[in-house]
Length: 99
Image (cartoon, rainbow, N blue to C red; front, side, top):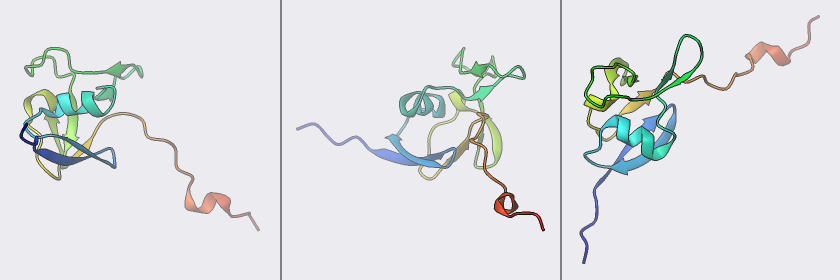
């Protein structure tokens, strides 16, 4: 019988996801999505390149602090915010008609 693999739950850009315990945040992002961590100033998708913290391409916000995804081990309850664009939300007043 194969032992069960422990998992942790992360919140990635507001979406709860479960990943194997012990993964780096960069590996977790690759498993639950496309691995993109941010966009460049020109709008191009960026992702981890070196895997050892030198390139800085894996920068994300973890629990409100800017950190390197390739150098951070996932913890249960971690809130990860990538630099990816979010869908535009309509302002609460936008549906009102002007007097």
